[in-house]
Length: 180
Image (cartoon, rainbow, N blue to C red; front, top):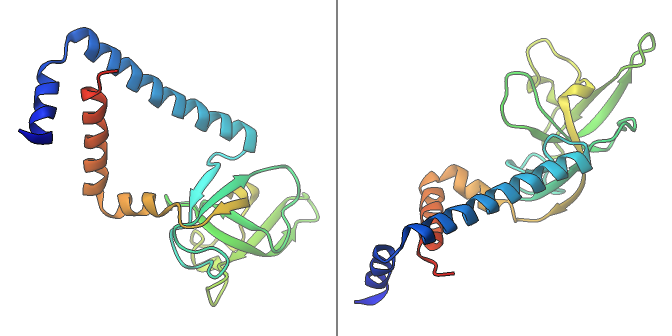
């Protein structure tokens, strides 16, 4: 009969109480992940404490698929820091280096100009139309650490959604058929 036959027999023999128990276990796993994410948001002060580098614009420092850990504090942003920012009208955050800091004398507000290490020019072409500088509210956080290549899992699942669905289906089947 083999593995597939054993899996089908296992699904057929599931009782309601066991199914409810496994559903609660799955719910607890998802809830725990959300709690950990929210705790990281509070601890780091960043709306997204972990991001994946999606392009080669920061090579050789960061490569596509690296995971960056972010922290956002009230310290002034300095030239040379690597920041992750959102641009109005774009969904995906951008990871680039601050190349200029501009402080407005009358208000004390700090504005920054960014550039990818592997790009020829600054990021003004990426900003919203007519925008020359990033304000503090655009910046999600500063890079404080990274894990190389670990983010490729996210990139592959985003670029090839069928793999994501197969993985979720396999994990769901594993939860349903487990006897614990």
